[in-house]
Amino acid sequence: MAQDSSNPLTPQDCLVAVMVAISASDENIRTAELVKIQSAVNNLPIFAEYDIDRMKPVSQTVFDLFEQEDGLAALFGLIRESLPQRLTETAYALACDVAAADGKIHEDELRLLEEIRYELDIDRLHAAGIERGARARHML
Image: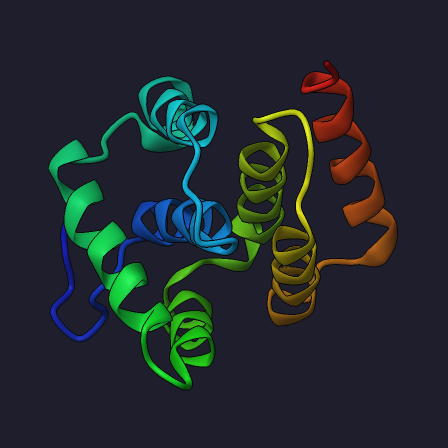
């Protein structure tokens, strides 16, 4: 996918950033979460043309922003600027899957999921369905 210099993230970069952000939200990136991110990027049609080498710089951007006082707001600004509306529920679903990958959703992850719902303007009823699907797929 072509990179526009005025828009530093591709839509796929945004999806990766959301997954990395939810994984890093509790300051403990678990193996199950990394495997879920890798699996999504390797298997989902939205990532068919994605340059996997972009994952590392996108992840580093998320980590760098998390170290700044207003980093989360900046991250959401980048995502809202680059993620098409048609992919907001996809982003939320991927975040839910990563959060649930280790069998339980931690408090910090719950707070970030709530923030993602708000920032990406995900309808509450749609979000509940997405969350229920993630729980069902990752039940221990």
